[in-house]
Length: 127
Image (tube, rainbow, N blue to C red; front, side, top):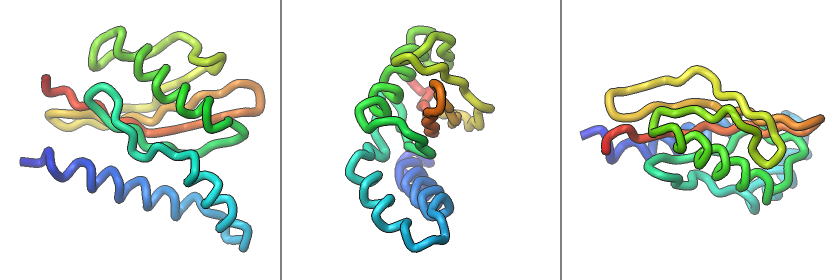
């Protein structure tokens, strides 16, 4: 009976992360609006959800390509697979996975030069 709760929990987590990531200076409002116009939070990809996180210099198009490309690469190795290849020229690393009986969460960080983008994804493991 936990399945209907996942999306609201993911949305709450995304909102909390967004609030915590805002700087204390008064310039936060324009930055938040610009980021919101690009965000796909939470986008649904192949039995799971993606919650965008920190971004440093990565365009909106590349963020979407990274999210979907990484998921496609990872899923080539099964639902619990990982991606070891470059995605859109970025090197990606997946952090520790937190799991429950029917899903897991992981943070992915992709870097290329001075650019970086991180996001959290949830993968449902019930088929």
